[in-house]
Amino acid sequence: MRLFRARSWLWLTRKIFQACMALYSLTAIGSIDTMISNFLTSLQFLADEDSRVHCSLNFNTETGRLSSRRPNLQNQPALEKDKYQIRKAFQASPGNNLIVGTLKRM
Image (cartoon, rainbow, N blue to C red):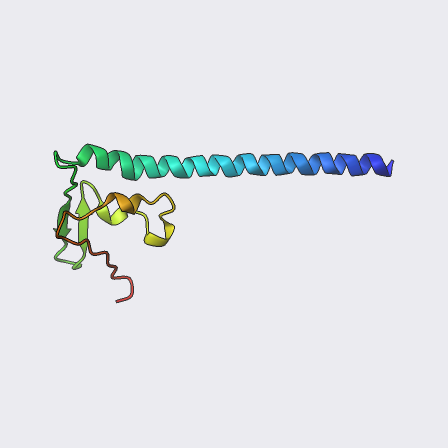
């Protein structure tokens, strides 16, 4: 009887592990899909003939905040969270540099 219980427990443990791995895989697929739809696809459609993306910058005079739209370049993945290296798609033209900054600590 104990051997049967041990086998049943082992079988159940394997099934739970497989279910957890399936959920993890679905979450990873969802994350990849979000990155593709939010960042890569929209940038491809908004690029000009030189493969450059130009956004509209807006300055809110009431709050003093700067925002961008079409595309929202402030919504790119954070440097430490960019596991698909989307930020590498942004390159400065020869002789220029890109500056990345945050006002979070001010």
